[in-house]
Image (cartoon, rainbow, N blue to C red; front, top):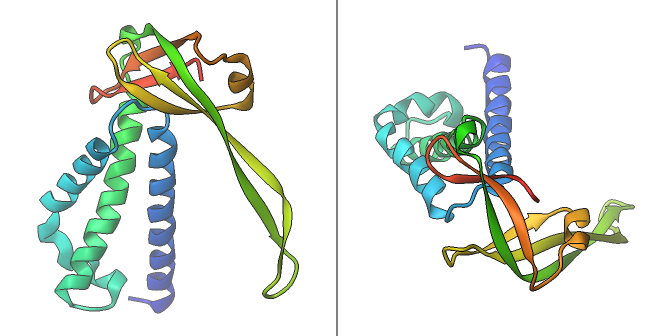
Length: 180
């Protein structure tokens, strides 16, 4: 193959890998499931398609089994992770919308220092970035930590109830559609 074409495909595959992980993470924040379920599904898909690991030699530039297997598990796993969570989120059953009242147990802010680059090896402080979280208890006893906006954080009181609108996802994992 043409070297320019192969290099372009490698860069596009890297972007697809990063975008898949980012999209999966963003959708996971609105999905009420333990972390190992979507990762387990992605790994099962990657392991089920493992006989095709030799097809990755164009990306790894080697015929080595270990490198091609790792590349296959990483790339197929990341894409499967994003597809599983986005399918659960966007293909959710609209007829299964229900409201659930949760108890806000704790609310907290995480502060992260921002920096900017001013020289080759020099960074200076550029303010802080705040992330807002609510720890809520559902009626069935599950406790979840939810990432929320500053407006929702300011309106919510600790020890009070909050109504969340949930929807059953396509693959059965509940998705928060409103209230955050």
